[in-house]
Length: 347
Image (cartoon, rainbow, N blue to C red; front, side, top):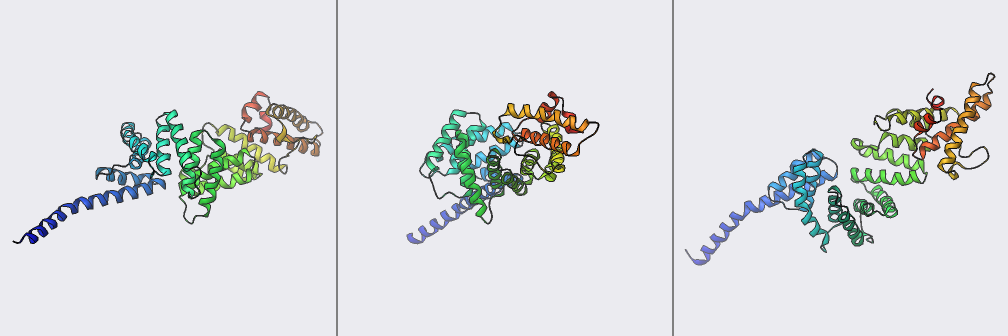
């Protein structure tokens, strides 16, 4: 056999030996990529076996390890979660610090420190991610969502709120946005609307978020509250009636009654009888006005010769103040029981 022929055979034999390894690596990467795609769209049951397969076939990647750690925590397997968190940390830290690191690397590293309650490192990782990506103008909607979370981890509420809004706008223009991230961005942006008393905007965003991700829809109580603020009283009453969470279920019963009363009197007032805006009143002033309005409503209701106009006037003011109290995040149940006017609401 000539030397060139011999070399050809050796080369073919080497290629034949390497082929299974190449195929295995390709299969592992394919499993990791598909598992990550499913993970980010919230299909955790389908994602987990693919991510596990990728690791078994040799994938050593911080993102894959982080995702598995998250899934094991969901499945109440803390030992497995800690194992993959330990593997993910050095790889994510290295990627986040490199020139080729992505915002996803910074986000996962920050989220990992948060889950481990390593708060100084969490804040530092968030700040480094913001420094690296905060001024970028080429981020898509999903990456803007991750940037908003970095601002949130860093304690920058204004930066977080502004970036969530940009994320919502960007994903709203996409033909097929990630439904999980879009829903989370909408929910966060709705909270900004709620604090700014843009109730109609907030209600629309929360309902859209619920449609995108029904398995993890925004809380029914929150959705009912913004509908109350938006003046959609039938929807608010229905949504309050759907609340099953133990922490808010009793308060929701009061909310449903408030919504029904306001629907009956033609909607809530924005001003006191003297012309002062409810918005300008602080909490103690609203609380005091609510107690006084309760007394006036009770007197009008219990009068021997009821005056229908007076009754409606006092009812409207009382329930407008009750709604204002709830919209500020206060407990109407506690206030009404303490002020001895719960019976005016619940009857």
